[in-house]
Structure formats: structure tokens, C-alpha cells
Length: 244
Image 1 (cartoon, rainbow, N blue to C red):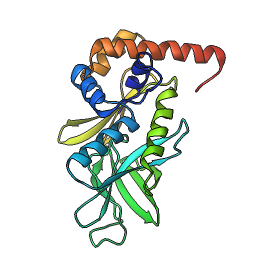
Image 2: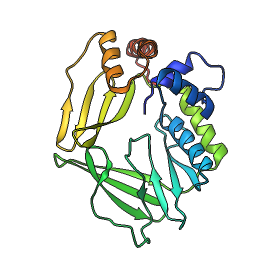
Image 3: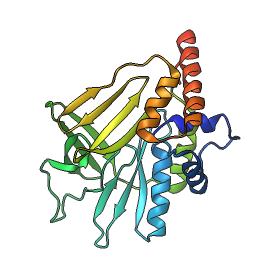
Image 4: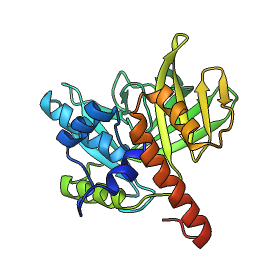
């Protein structure tokens, strides 16, 4: 998941900023890139439809700059599973509290660098994340289906609003575990089952291109263009005091 494509495509597109699945696939083949949580949700939903899996979009704070998107998919028995590529989940997780297979115990193997606990509360599901250092965090999902046109409108809104803080999140399989490497506002770090490890700080844009390329294999010319946009955007927001 990354917001670099949002900035890169924003400069190259017309009025419509949300890409369709075919264009996302084309960009992935050409540059290795993916997109933000809306891109990934739209792409995943199309894959489920091709596989004849019943699925639908969900979201929180839709139509705002803090929006988040994910997918609920159902198995053949109608059991619902949360699929959140935007937050880098490793595999879908059962959220139906009345299912005989449901558990509220802490589970490993679903989220990189943390165990998770699912708490099903009516039309909401709370996820509790347990880190190796004892830190806990929580996220609440509203699992009511979002109407498709409403979801696409929220996606379009998101693609028109760019925060000056670039973000890249990627799962890396190393040393027998799925790890979570993140580049967030010109800092980067690795989340593992044994803790959080910060990378050495970098000052040079080209060095950031090399580091992100090493982790993601994204095209270097793409990285230079998108990071350059964010560098300029960050400078402008610092000068004006405005953040969108």
C-alpha cells in the first residue's frame, strides 16, 4: 500500500483521479506500483467478482481525508471475513461472532509484527493489536456494506486530496515471518515479531529512491518523480502552514 501513486497519477490525469482496475494492472506491470487503500480495495473486489466470491466494500470516515477502505468477503457458508490490504493484513480473518469457528483469543499469522484479537459488536468489529513490546492499539470497522456508487465517490474524493506526508507500507517475508516495512513522512522502520527497528535517517532524495526501491522494487524513475512531488508539497505546506 502506498500513496506515491496517488501523487504521481494526480499530475498526469484529467478530472478523474481514481484509476480503474485495468489501468492499475497496467501501471503495476510497467512500474511495479500498487496504490492506496481505495485502489487495493477496488482491485481486490474485482478479483473476488472474477472468482465468483460474494464480497462488498466497507469504509470508515468516507468522504474525508481520513477515510479508510477495506473489503468483506463471504465463504460458501455465508461467513464474513475482513480483507484489508490497505493495512497490510496477511490473510482474511473471520469476523462473525456467532460462527462456531470464531474465536476472541489472540491470533498470530494475520497481521505482520502483531497478534490480533477480534471483537464482534453488531454491525461493528473492533480489532485489537498486541505488539511484542506490550503496546496495544485498536481499530474499529463498520461492516455494513457501502453502496458501490457511494464507495467510488469516496475513492474519487480521496484521490483528489494529497497529504504532504508520503507513505509506503510493504510486507516482507524474512527469517520465517511476514514483516512490515514502512516509509512514513521521510522516516522508515521495520515491524517484526521481536520488535520495531528504525532505519538510519536519510537526507538525500536519491538515497530514499534507492532504499524504497530495495524494499518494493518500484521503478526508480517513478520513485524520483513521486518523491520529488512530495518534497515540493511538503515545502509548500511548511511555508503556508496548510495541510490538505
